[in-house]
Length: 341
Ligand code: ASP
Image 1 (cartoon, rainbow, N blue to C red):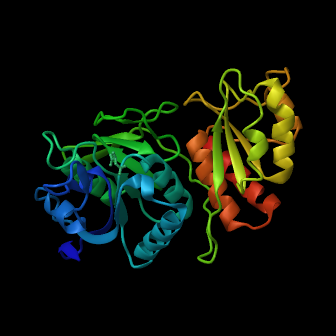
Image 2: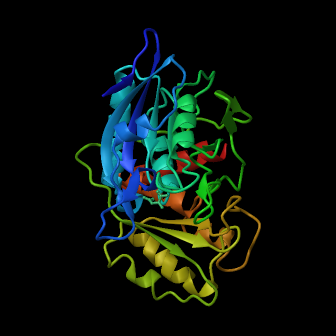
């Protein structure tokens, strides 16, 4: 469906997936809001805007974002690549905010960088005062249509700010200013129809997941005070194909779980991240058992600046792309290097 088309305009393809932004009160008998609006309704809520932007809408999914799967994201990546093949200048993905930081990073890995992909949503639905959907979508369309001398890849556009997919985090349960980038700050902002970039990120190493491959389950485990190894010891037998551990501080775990982690890593790849929510894992500072030097010497992989959710996305995608573990982990290392550069 073409919502607006002007000669010589820049085409932005908008994919709608559901979420709060698309939610309305369900019925008189049921309570609460549920995703109901399609892309036409979301685009119809925008005020008139730049005549030079032609928007094409696609109804992709209509669900709470917690119900999305990696299969959905691989299909969405393929659809975005196809849209760029057909000449799109940029693209917008509208979805629920709950898993938006994961979707954005997955798309940054899966979509060839030929134009900006701006992911957005809303914290307040259309039946609430201060509905933030239309302003977020309009800013996202403008960011996707903006001319840049570099490739921003996939970004999150929310509450006037632009965040890099690799750094962004949903940091508040209800605030419209929920998206933050604790390690790096936003990349810029969009106001009064203008898009301002205040910093850049280096291009990510991309990954292509064959249509025939089904991403396997990767566990995400957080270290906590007093932990023992009983959960770690079960993970391989539960069928996980990889494990991400959110470790203490700069990449430390209790000494009492190190042997179990090493044994698990012989079964499936184990990646260490920091549970702190910002910064990167260390490589050669701490020498106690369970610290980064010990864990690296036992063959565990470190995720650098990727937080647990992002590391899990990257590990899921590389394991789906490459059946050979060594090749998959080389690809994971290349992603970490390209993010950390
Ligand atoms: N609360 C969520 C949202 O902001 C619901 C979802 O993620 O689908 O959209």
